[in-house]
Image (tube, rainbow, N blue to C red):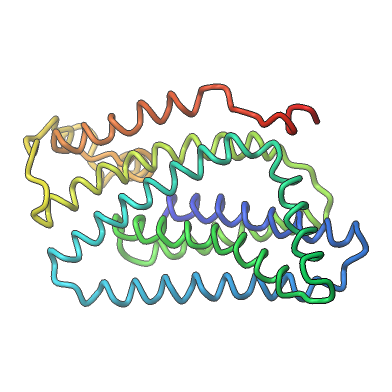
Length: 275
């Protein structure tokens, strides 16, 4: 439940911030009449992401067991790549994303004066990117857990993100977003490491990976995944009480370089540095 909550809180808040920045710019420049157009782009993006997620979820339920395991492994691997790119992009671009977004809005409004379609497309693409990332993250997270807890966690995370976005826009509340995204990004790297290990496990169960299947260690007598602590560690770190050698290797081979890149000084563009 915690991982879907964190995913939707982070992705939802990122999308909410994009929309609030666009709305603030339209309001500030006397273009509030374009608000319905902006919300049209948001609605189209949300509709696309919901339809895609439901279609994929419905289709995979019809797969035979091995094909379903293979699909879950592929989704987990894609989620790892997207999540890593997202974290590194946010690390480097967070300082000047507002200016870039305002420039994109201005370009959309002046591309075809009087027409709202360029703005619809621009908002649609901005929100759809966050939504499509969420679809793959949630598919991977739901593959690791069953029952109602993961969907409930995702809905709670999305509701929290929408509430925070509203507080920031209408309430004028200032939140240390740099710290928020930095610490959630760090947690997400551990989540991605767990997904990398789970992808190896799924590929093995699908018959695609049979190397390093010896047990690396067995902590079932000390810390089982059925305990509260074990469940939290499984959600956050991808902890398994008796993982294979290849799962541990995938976890370490992903996480150690990712942490090194994460803690390197962020690059800033010349225009951002000048501001």
